[in-house]
Length: 113
Length: 118
Picture 1 (cartoon, rainbow over the protein chains, first blue to last red):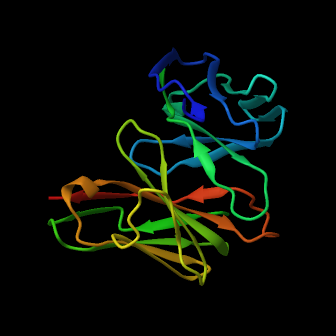
Picture 2 (cartoon, one colour; picture 1 turned 180 degrees about the vertical axis):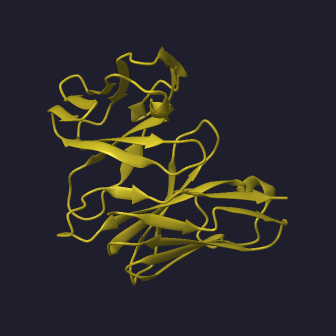
């Protein structure tokens, strides 16, 4: 079993739809949770990061973490064609020194005009 | 802020040659830089972690003599793929994490380098 599971998609939605992207994980020591957006042939761009459980909102994006279920989500409201990209979840433990980040495989999202 | 650049963005080389990729943090000092590779439809795979002024720490299965990493300053790390072969063709991405106190707690990624070995 992988430490982080993420459906690769592709996920196609019409413009304006609410998008829900999810990851599950098995390592209960993960405390920091991130979402990255990666356009084709580009490096990942950090969208949001949260510490421990709860919600965090930034514009059209909302990140949720449910540590009891080992489940994290990213919601995109009023989706736009420019949101079409691959979204990677990532997470790491909190410990002294070097903290390795574990990435999901990424979900490819296509927003259709 | 938090911009990371990579050079070159794309390189094509012959089998057996060496290729150097540069990673720079442009507006912050990076205590730690990371090198990843990404194959099509696969996740980012960490190759190694480098701290300024010390030897890189390589992940299991990554040949340190083949992938030479140098982190000579707080803003520059290089990855040299020595004696490249077609199976080394991939998308190489670096990331950098700022020193504590600079306000950036997470890794910021460069735009990636597409390596094609003929």
